[in-house]
Amino acid sequence: MNIYIDFDDCLCETARHFCVLVKELFGKTVPYEEVRFFNLQNSFSLTEEQYEHMMIEGHRSEVLLSFEETPGASETVLDWIEGGHDVSIITGRPAGAYEASREWLDRHGLEQVRLYCLNKYGRDNFIKNSAFNLELEDYYRMHFDYAVEDSPLAFKYFDHLPGLQVMVYDRPWNHDCEFPGENYRRCPDWEMIRRIVQ
Image: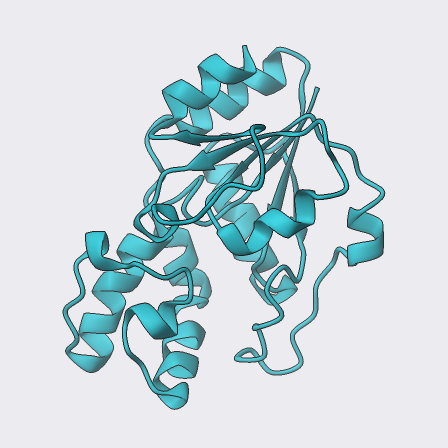
């Protein structure tokens, strides 16, 4: 089977790190549980200038490499690979973050997983002249049986795959979203994701 996995807040705890970062940079305290919007500018009540600064800082290689793994993620993905499944990480990070993202995966034993940077959100101009290594037209030629995603803004990229089973990783910013179909299931952890794919 072919499996799509989002990187941030599916494999690693990105938003939790940004809660710490926004306090360090601007003195703003926003508990993780109160990150109610996928758009962090809204969740943290930042100006355009503050948001750009935070995103640049948050995409430095040493920062990306410091993100904690979401419990059970690597173990589950490794089991899928060993079971013969084809796994691709489709991230909204720009290609400038590719090397650090690749290193993070390798450090967690996921050397065999393919990594693609896709402009899912059209909001990555905070890194000047940023590019992506997967174009939308190429992405739409790919086929997946299962997907692990946390962002409601990314759901539209599954419309061309009516049989896709989407496992929505439970996060505060997707609690109030309406799922597009019965093929979407909320998952509180990687153990439930593992059971669905089995």
